[in-house]
Each structure stands twice: as C-alpha cells, then as structure tokens.
Length: 330
Image (tube, rainbow, N blue to C red; front, top):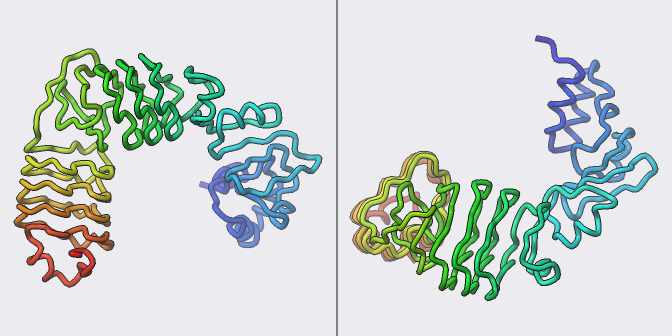
C-alpha cells in the first residue's frame, strides 16, 4: 500500500513537535510541501514555526499561553483549552470555544440554569446553593468539579447523565436533604463510593442521607468483600479509606495505579493481591492496615509514595524487600 499526500497529512496532524514536521519533509522528498497544505495549525506555533505553515486560515489555540497570530490570512479562531462561560460569551463573535466551564462566578452572574454550550461544572460551582431543590444536569456535561454542590442543603434529587466521566471529591458533601439520585453511568469509584450494579449502596459516606438511586430504594450496608469489575481503570484518592470491615479485595489488571490513601485504615484487611498491571503506589496507600499479614509487590511497581506502608501489619516483612524505600515506612 502506497501512502499518499492526504494520508500523510492526516497522520502528521498528530505530531507533537515542529521538528517532526521538518524531519518528514527532509527525510521523504515526495512529502515536501506537507506543511503548506494545512489550512489550520495542528500544533501550537511561535514566530519561527508560523512561517512554515503559510496557508493557515483557521487558527487553533490549544493552551492559554499559546502565541496568537493576527495576520490577514487568519479569519477564525478555535480555542481548545478550558474557558469560563463568561469568557466564551466575550469570545464567541471572534472564535469557537470547545471546552466551556460553568464557574461559580458564572453561576453568581447568570443563575442556576446550566447553559447548553457548557461542557463542565467548575470547582465549587453551586457551593452553598441553599435555594436548589432539584438539579437536572444536561448531557452536554462531562465533568463535575471539586465540591461542586457542597452545602446545597435543600437539594433533594439530582440527575447525573451517562456523559459524566469525572465527579470531583466532596461534590455532594453536606447535601443533607439529598435522598435520590439518577445515575445513568454507574462506573464510578470515588471517595463518595457511588458504585453499584444493583440497588445496594456499599459503605456510602457521601451524601449521608441518600436513599434512592435510579428510582429504587437502596440498602446501605457495611462492606467486608468487594470485587472491582474489569471496566474500572482508576481508583480515586481515599477510595476505600477507613473501610474498617473490608477483609478482602481483588484489584483487576485494568488498574495501573493505586492513588493516595486508597486503602488507608482498612483495619480488617488481611491480604491484598496487587496485579502486575500496577506500576505505582502513591502516598499513604496502605497506611494503618494493621491486620494485613501479607502483600505481594510485583516487579512492575517502579514508584512508591511517602508512608505508603506506615504502620502496616506486614511492615517487618516488607522492610526486607530492598526495592521499597525507607520513607515508605515513616
């Protein structure tokens, strides 16, 4: 199969550096002029690289600090980095914003209705929104920020669409009236531990008064065994922290990293199997796991966080492993 001009242009759109574009044209003569075919900049530009893309008509701004050119050949801008809704309203006549965030300042100015153009809810966006009783998050939203609905004390129901890929820590903390949630995508493991396949909420800490998920009554029960499905690729900070009755857990090979405080304070855990897919154990991960008798440390792990095995039940055994730094036990 012979690669033509169109194919190489499409492939070069994913280059990270101007040197890659230059090397392509120097190394393969028949692809000389590839950069001249672009009518947009596939990478951020400076004064030097701008000259190598002479036919740009649409200018893409990938990062907030990118250098922007206003020469006569450019007639449209596309902004890819996260901008507030207020800035979007200022910029929309001159360019297109691809990643619009509704910030707490936007909410103070424009109210509690989330505009359809918005892609994410910023940190503390609805913080102290005591007047909120219900919230329907539109499917355009993909991310809910840290403490987004903190202290929304009158909030009773909320709909979380399947478009959501991230819920920030303490998003619903102190939502004392929140008793019902509709979660279209249940593949969440976070500090709130809103993860379920059936209407049983296991070790729910936040929000405390939650009673209904997807229209079904839920049963809150302590946890002593937990099987993480293979669809999960990330365990968040404090994910199983203080699950004092947790005795066993199976970590699937889909997970590559154990985050800060992930299993800290799991006093009843006696053994945990770490798969070879794990390459990093972050700080305080197994601290104060006092009943832990054994833990395998696969050779795939190349990074250990501070105090990750502090006051761990098998601390003496782990200290014999020369790969584990001393600061892991301090």
